[in-house]
Length: 233
Image (tube, rainbow, N blue to C red; front, side, top):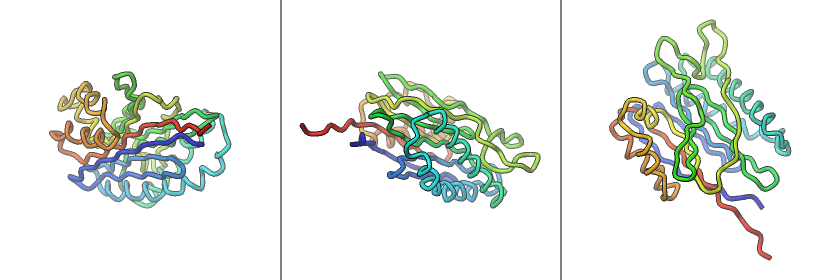
């Protein structure tokens, strides 16, 4: 019997650039933060969200794989393909943070990939830890968002990995409408910790929007929590 994943989401659409995708069957959670200062950021995010819908077919090939490194590499390969679709179909760019949850021998693991400056956090034991590293996307550089590269090729997913899902904590995915508030001093990481600490996933997601209200950008957040299921004797 699979462990249960609780999911909370919240979104504030100031510019209409963000998209997110949740697949409860493959337990895949993704945020696309279309780059608002560049052309077609919203189209890039929408294109990426639609393309990522094919992950359910891709994931079938790995349904029984228990090698986390192989799973993370496969996710990065798929995400690079999504980036190629964005490059082919739009002139826009979009950061992407994705986190499928896999269950191996009764234990949950987060397999993740990052392109751009959305973030993946782990909240456990009262502390918030950033897992992903920001690949900043300032205009003129667009370091590693999904989309075309300066040489005309495709930007590839270079940052990925896996870790155990903390059964006493939460996983947070967010666009830079929230995490960028930390970088700009609108929010303290202690504020983020308090926003998720003892709350349900739904309330934690709403709280994160509230603490980031001064940051004028689209805001999207997904909060995940695991609950162990026990078989009746």
